Image 1 (cartoon, one colour):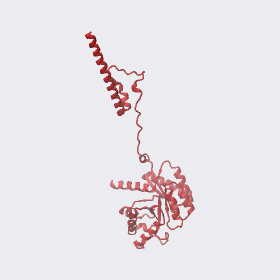
Image 2: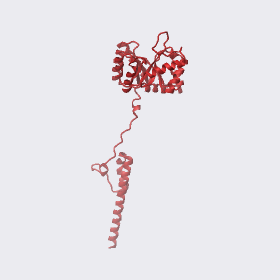
Image 3: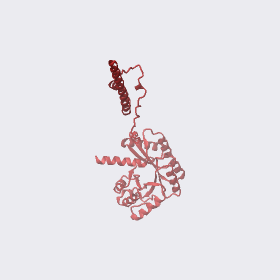
Image 4: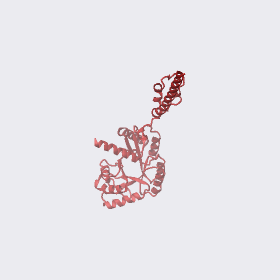
Length: 314
């Protein structure tokens, strides 16, 4: 009788130990699955053998362990800007806008990444510039600046022959004529932009108003970039004129040149004008350019600046 009671007590203790081990096993399983997911589930037979020595995992029989396995997490992937980092970047500016209202409205229908630069003196400029800003385009003031020779670049042209205060008065007038602007670029200006002394007061004024100066590069001797950077003015420069030869073959050749520069440099910027051929070519190119990424002018200028500073540090 005593032996039977001892056996019952031993069996009861064994059952109690088994219940404790079983509870410990499932607690360990739940904790491990939360931390380890699929790899933990695949190692469960070994874990079971530690807690439950009699446990045998049968391949042909569904195990409780196979009822739920934490799904593999989806890879986060690189941030959006890095997914496209391999594509060369291209920005396009259409300037000389405002004088021809019909062609200007065609330019407004181009993708919003394309920047639009307005001449300050046409009567229609304020209304058209407001429409451009509403459509999401970056708006620039296409400021008339003196070219080499005697020809005028337009009313209230900036000139190195004028006093700095007069040039600033003329610049302020031009900015006031173009609502929604965020920057300027030079209309002509091969003489004005080649002189550092004439540019200095302009850069001081633009810096105070947080306005960028995009250099149309109408002369190889331009001083816009060094003058702008000396005053903390955001800047960049054109790589290609799309329509010096405003023909289908001419514009197409310049678009190919733009693509080549973007591949070589990582980023390139073009200027075009509101000619029928140019607007058609840019619209078609923008819709059929899977090898490139069309970006805003500010983005292209920022990338160019980063690249030039990186090269300067080497």
